[in-house]
Image 1 (spheres, one colour):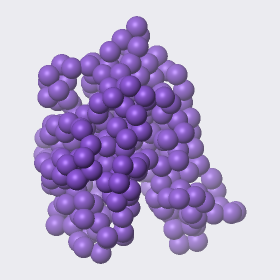
Image 2 (spheres, rainbow, N blue to C red; image 1 turned 90 degrees about the vertical axis):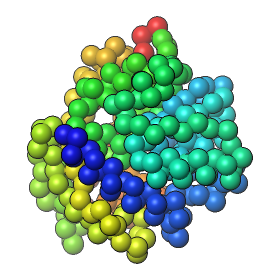
Image 3 (cartoon, rainbow, N blue to C red; image 1 turned 120 degrees about the vertical axis):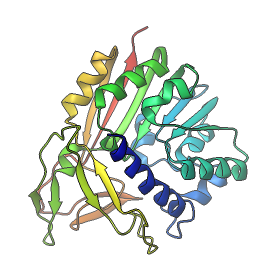
Length: 274
């Protein structure tokens, strides 16, 4: 298992270096450095009131959403990621933006110790996070341990059903993966380039992923002592995952007219028992 996660870390070190200097501005860098927000319409509409909240952002990547949460009113923000390149970039962006934020390098599974058993008002996790993790039940226990009584989780990610399909040239979908990935048999992918459209190649192209049914994510949180506030499924993504997808908003994509529609993303709000 350590080999799988180490391979993923090398891959994300490459991606972080590219994303922090991405000419496509997929991450809205200049907007954040000017004191704005990189959050998309979907997550911005669902996170609720974060004024005066103490927030930890797990798997924060290069930290732009972390800084955005501070710009949107959070009283303090902490980002955690396993990539040293990502954390270095996040700290550099915080310095350039003049935004107070803490960034910690650690595996999400080691977050409680890495954050010195501190607890928070909110755990924030979005886009491309949980399918990199082999054990969703262990992740949920970490989330619960990081929250104060009454604290809440906001999770938004690609829907596991969406990851089961390959998009064909005519826009139709072909089922290629099962709905649940065993921890010891992850899906193996090789990608030459990152997803932003950057033409610079990845050096470490191998990566491993795990699909977790939505029921597993919900049950993991319930077993960890969380109360489910909402579960939403969405027909939109913030990237063009299939060839037939069309842009229907700023970095918002849906299946084109006449094509089969499936849930493309899902979001969960949950609260730790008081």
